[in-house]
Image 1 (cartoon, rainbow, N blue to C red):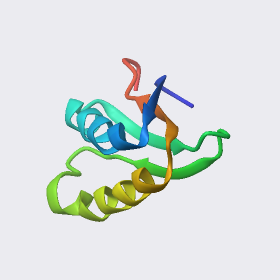
Image 2: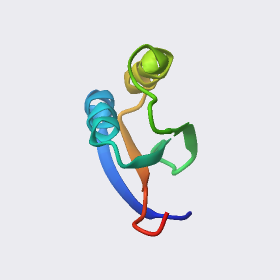
Image 3: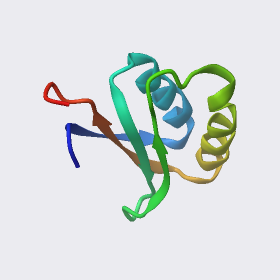
Length: 83
């Protein structure tokens, strides 16, 4: 991965809110949601200007994931200073 990477562990009910908060921060390049075993469930590449209705299908997918997982990890790749 390039840029800065972070990981957050969240419960299923906190998943959608945390992802929305990360997207609104604006310096996130990619979000990867992994299940309890560490397997990738969904990868969301974000580009500048991706907001609103474009993300609606993503919110629906994350809501569905949140309904079936109890614990998950959100891996966040942020835009680095040198990017």
